[in-house]
Amino acid sequence: MPSARKNNGSKVLSGLPLGGHRLIRPILFYPDKRLRNPGKEVEEFNAELHQLIDDMAETMYSAPGVGLAAPQLGLSMRLFIVDVATEENEPSDLRVFINPEIIEAEGDTTFNEGCLSFPGIREEVDRAERIKVRALDRDGKPFELEVDGLLAIVIQHENDHLDGKLMIDHLSVLRRRLVHRAMTKRVAVDAAQ
Ligand code: NI
Image (cartoon, rainbow, N blue to C red; front, side):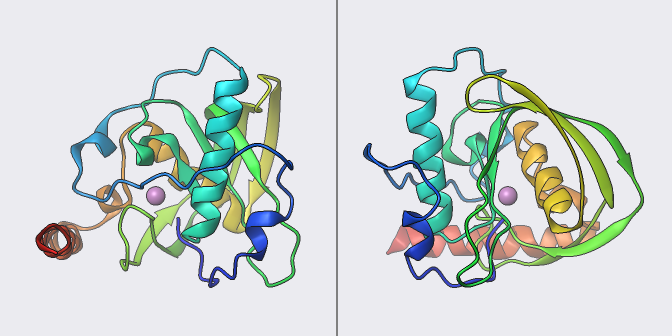
């Protein structure tokens, strides 16, 4: 999901491990078919995975966004990152979810969501209000988290990406058609430039 906050670059340097070379990777835009590929379970927790996570964080902060899933970079992996600390001067709060499972969901909430794969689009999406998620961290260590609010919404949005599911799938037929048309037009304009 994109952040409402403008990127001023400061977030990129704070809260991330120092050293190493981090790369901004290109994000796929809808209707790129690769966004529909479900992710495969991550099995190796090695330096290569850590490099990818660091690159994903760099890519998310520079967008700027509050969440990014591996399939948005064309990678079929069950991995996403989230950072909902979007206020100026608020320390970053990067969270990594690998092979996640939403094991409990309750209540209803609606949020005006965006997605880095749908630049410029914001739509009302219904989500569970409170969730419990089980996942592995960057070292393969399991954890559970019970959350509500923006963090719960972003986790549900990013988790959808791992199943090839996109925010457009939550919309009415009419809204879906409008968003589809706006995105195909945009991609055609980008390609012509
Ligand atoms: Ni998204």
